[in-house]
Length: 446
Image 1 (cartoon, rainbow, N blue to C red):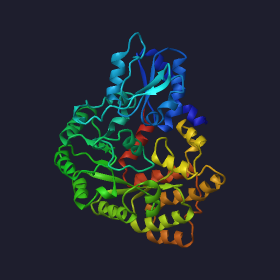
Image 2: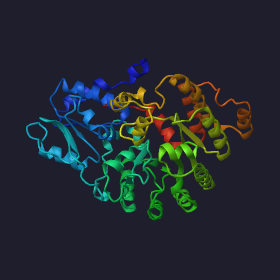
Image 3: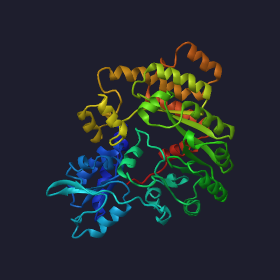
Image 4: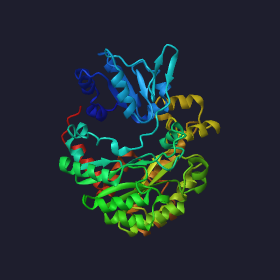
């Protein structure tokens, strides 16, 4: 752990707060990126008190058996956890987890690790209470300016690299994976939030906010009473001129589109992702036509892709002109369909997959074999150029391309962060500005 990480670390105080709480149950929601940290915190708590520990979240859902090989974890909840966690709490006696089988719950038994199939999806999302965001806003008050909300659960698509491919398999047999709150319920939460927290803008975190046009129309009618700017995630196949007009008329200032690669062949062969590069270009054009900032997600390190594919991406983005290009390295996450594809084609070994399930981030890059460092060094400069490209005039972009410079730029995380900060501030990115406000604000964590 570096000096800055040590300065910002709050693990000690978090463990102390958990011990002092005298809670009947301690629960963690874990992603791959925080999984090993959560294991460390749970282990330190267990050394002090005997309170049962339950893990849930996408990483635990993907690898419940392996998660339970860690003695500090007493049970795992897979999939949607509201009903399962309530059953656990209702069944506890004398500070111990219930011994009976509970849908969605995995635990250690006398015969080894065993788990139950999940109960059906929660269909009526309106029946759920609004989330208690005081848990976060009391600790970091600046968060209240940036109100995050989801109007749906599930995604209509099942891209191979995404956790939704896992959930489609886990809940196979369900008639529909996307469930949505009514527009009236969403607006009721936002009105409640405005009275309680006074946010300055809203961020919708649905996988595909624009998937249902009829829902969007009703939402648009009601959202006018809210009147705050907002941002969304969408998909090229779920965006047209009418939907973009509704978004623009109701205050949507930014939309992010997942493209991942400009190669339609890679998208079909490895990513199971619908839509084409041409359709993504049309979506960007529609958003910009209506005055909405258009961001695109781009992945480096995809199977079979190298420098040539990044050069093609540079040419593509130079023509399409998105307002932001968010580039990321391809990461393997446990349970995603692409992990099995990589096993079959020899990219990943069983040992690699075991390491991924254990949350070791260094094993998540696509290229783990000999030459991995050279490969990353060859592609990393393109991240710098993708950050710069939307801010450059056309004449500069052509000059960079003509002299083959996009792949020769200096790369350093600090340089990237500086470029991203400048771009965000120039574009009036409300989310980024609030992130800075949070970083500089007074915090009371834990």
